[in-house]
Image (cartoon, rainbow, N blue to C red; front, side, top):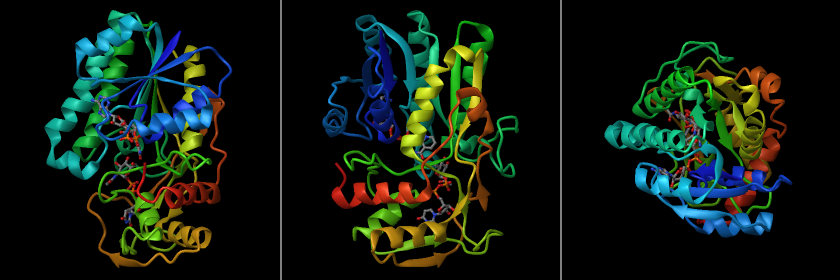
Length: 336
Ligand code: NAD
Ligand code: UD1
């Protein structure tokens, strides 16, 4: 049997493939990625870490025929679906590209899965679907979105809930990620954003390594420990292991279930900067600038459901998250 990983050469996908390869079962891994935000160099790095090969197919999930061929050639048992565009700012500039790639792409994938009677799915959702609810955020809260990227995640969740309601054979885990950071401890794979990073950690890492001059801290007048924004940062390897657990427990999930993957703890921007400075030994110049539009003061998970349902909990602390980010960034200053 094979497991299909869409978007498997991306940041979270590649770390998940490594964790899946560590399992002692005979499941083959098939990665489908169009390489729009990743490179085949990741495949060599995965092989270097795991000493196992994966099957890679360059294809767009929006291409029904290509996806149909993947399912015809490989005996796929279940799918972990990471493929999608993820930049919030870009999604407001190019909404059609986001709705097409993320929403239409997922519908096409689901149609192909249904046609081949493959009805087990783990989907990459996001804490962005909680809108402006007050933290800790739990899965029973009402959902909303404030930008096209967030809307695509919300629409896909609705589609998955409707699909599972229409056919009880489907088992779907909708994993709502908080803020994934860090890298594999080998330093061989990590986050490799194109252009100027939008997210805090890759930005700080590129300042530390000298690629960027100075961090802009978006606001120091929030009602938080030091006035800067607080988020629930989660080590990408913990997140990857959450996917393995979700897959292993899909049989326990009837229908579609939304599950948070976070630590339940919050860390401020300045706490991140100071810890990064301490671990890397580098100076991290920063300037306080006005708040970024759409940002919330504090966002962190209620992580209990994943513990109860999947027997999963994040185990890596902030020190590990930042040490691993720094190892990856300092050993690969220009990325892959
Ligand atoms: P990433 O960009 O590193 O990985 C996504 C991969 O999907 C890339 O390799 C890209 O080339 C591929 N891809 C995009 N569109 C495709 C298509 N049409 N067909 C085939 N491949 C396609 O992003 P990531 O950080 O690994 O995120 C993975 C998933 O998790 C995304 O769906 C993202 O929205 C979601 N997510 C990410 C975060 C985060 O902070 N990184 C947070 C919440 C949710
Ligand atoms: C962002 C996305 C969200 C997505 C999440 C995880 C926005 C508005 N939201 O959220 O949809 O699910 O990433 O990928 O983009 N910060 C700075 N300077 C920077 C960058 C960030 O001070 O250069 C601050 C932010 O104000 C925030 C914190 O750092 O307080 C984390 O920011 P970021 O990494 O962008 O994540 P989110 O805001 O949680």
